[in-house]
Structure formats: structure tokens, C-alpha cells
Amino acid sequence: MTGGLPQRVPAEGLPPRVRIHEVGARDGLQNEKAVVPTEVKAEFVRRLAVAGLTTIEATSFVHPKWVPQLADAEQLFPMLGDIADVGDVALPVLVPNERGLDRALALGARRIAVFGSATETFAARNLNRTVDESLAMFEPVVARAKAGAVHVRGYLSMCFGDPWEGPVPVAQVVRVARALMDLGCDELSLGDTIGVATPGHVRSLLSALNAEGVPTDAIGVHFHDTYGQALSNTLAALQHGVSTVDASAGGLGGCPYAKSATGNLATEDLVWMLEGLGIHTGVDLAELTATSVWLAGHLGRPSPSRTVRALSEQPTRSQSHKEQ
Ligand code: HMG
Ligand code: MG
Image 1 (cartoon, helix red, strand yellow):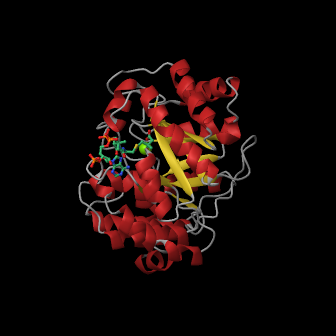
Image 2: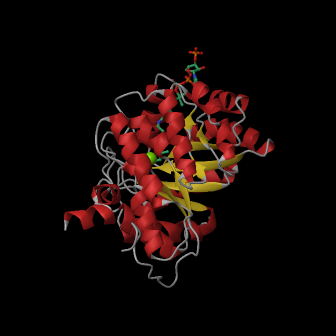
Image 3: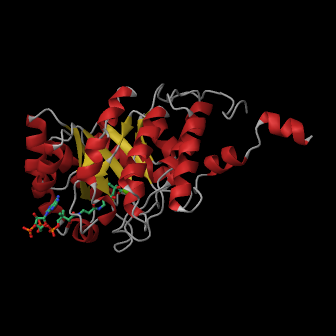
């Protein structure tokens, strides 16, 4: 290890670049008991951009009663305008329906995400709809977004297991994934909402999606780390050719409508692995770690990321010389 980075030892058969889709400000903060002040959220997003993240999911235009933690979307989104100074940063937002789309477009959002479910129970709990009713709800959202050249991501939750329904058959996931792509989504993010996936399962779902005509380059992976499998699952996806990986700074996250969900794959843990594999991320790991430590101070609890802990607890070289 040198200067807070792993030794670079590339492995064969992996994508040369990976785009990290940072979800800490949305998936992370939506699940915090404490409502984080809007100014702190804006500063968080800005610091993520300074650390080199280029796709930063900013907030959700959902019903404020359903997710009170993100009820300040109207105040927050305009505060992010100056992030353009930092570089070319995309700020996608979650939009469940036309009301959400209207709110997002009114503020100039250029990237949105609809979010479907592979299971009926989660569709009912998260969207108050059946799976097919939610697809019908997304249809005009995607059509209007595409007509305005707005990029659309389609999330699909409960791809690997559901806390109420148990195992979720691959064919059931593929049906809804295909339907989201048929609506016109530009990309699909496979959500392991409760973190139960294992690498063979990941490969099998990716192959089944390819067989149904969903190309690997349209697929991103979204792993929660409940069972400590997020990084292994990510490596399996990279080996399959996936090059878009969702992660949240400091491992923040969960889902308010799936109580067994814990944090997402921590961005720092992901960057550590990718840089070690020689895959360029453009992320400054020290800056990102400092951001997660700073946010943990606001949240009043330490980051669950092993990399954040290792890097922030490590004495600097000059300190360790003095101690010797
Ligand atoms: P509903 O109660 O069925 O809404 O909720 P409705 O369509 O019947 O409308 C009821 C009222 O809400 C109306 O007002 C609407 O205007 C208003 P009224 O006429 O009664 O005065 N309304 C809205 N207001 C503001 N913004 C809106 C909006 N929509 C309706 N967008 C709804 C349906 C979809 C709105 C609700 O279920 C909802 O907001 N759900 C969001 C849940 C959520 O955000 N969950 C977390 C994100 S998903 C996730 O975390 C998983 C992911 O990370 C991937 C993974 O890990 O798997 C993405
Ligand atoms: Mg999630």
C-alpha cells in the first residue's frame, strides 16, 4: 500500500473504466432517522463532486409524506447549480410519476430515474401500486422525459430476494426488466435492495437479461451490503462486462420501505478494489474518505465502510515516525 491506495495489480477480463453512480445523497440520506439540513446535503454533494464523482444522485421528487428525509428537494436542487464549476457532473433525481417529473423538470433536471419492483409486495409498499400499475405509471414519465432528451434510468428493486416473498425467480425479474427497457429507459440498475445476492446469482441474472436482449452496457448494478457480499457481487458483474456500479459514500443507505435493507456498497470500498485492479475511477480516495468522515460527524455515527475506517484511523507517515 502506498499513500492510502492499494498496490495496482490488474486482472484480465475486466472493463478498463467503471462509472460510479453515487447514491449516498439519495439512497443514503433517505434512510437516516435524522433529517439532515438542506445546506449540509448541498455541501455533501459538492464535496462528492470535488472528490471526482461525476454521477451524483441528488434527491427524489417523491411524495414528501412517503420520504420526509428528502422533502426539501425543491430547496436542495437549485442549490446544486454551482456544481458545474467543479466539472461535468450529472445530478440524476428519482421520479415515480408525472407529478414528480413536473417538479423535476421545473427545476431543470436533465437525468431522472423511475423505480420499479420485481415483486408485488414491494411494489405495493413502495409505490402503492401493483407491478403492472407501476409500469403504467412510468410510461408517460419515460415518454415525456425522452421527448425532452432527458436521460432515464430504470431501477429495478428486489432482483435477488424479497423480505416478504423470499426468493425471486430470475424469469420474474427479467420480465419487469424487459418491460422497463421497452418503455424506453436508457439504462437499467439491478437493485439488490436487501443485500441477499451472491456472485453466481448475479451472473445468472445478467446472462438471462442478455438472452432477453438487454445488453450488458445498458446495465448497472446496485448492491446493498447486508450480508457483506456487495463487493464480491460487484466483481462478478465486472467479470461479466458491467461497467456501471452504484455505491454510496461511506456505505450510507437502505430503503425506508424495506426494513431489512442496510447500507449500499461503500464507494470507498469500491474505489479501493477498482484502483487495486488498475481500473481508473477518477476518484480521490482521500478526499472522499474525508467527506464521509465529515458527514458521519453530522449524522452522529461512524461510517460502516471498512475502507473509511482503515484510512481515517491510519496514522499519517509523519505521525508514525514521531511515535517510533
Ligand atoms: P400515492 O399515495 O398512491 O399517490 O403514492 P397518488 O398518486 O394517489 O396521489 C396522492 C397525492 O399525492 C396527490 O395529492 C398527489 O398530487 C400527490 P392530492 O391530490 O391528494 O393533494 N403526489 C405527489 N406529491 C408530490 N410529489 C409526487 C407526488 N405524487 C403524488 N411525486 C407515490 C404514490 C408513488 C407518490 C408514493 O408511493 C411515493 O412517493 N413513493 C416513493 C417511495 C420511495 O421514494 N422509496 C424509496 C426509493 S426506492 C429505493 O430506495 C430502491 C432503490 O435504491 C433500488 C434498490 O435498492 O432496490 C432505487
Ligand atoms: Mg437502494
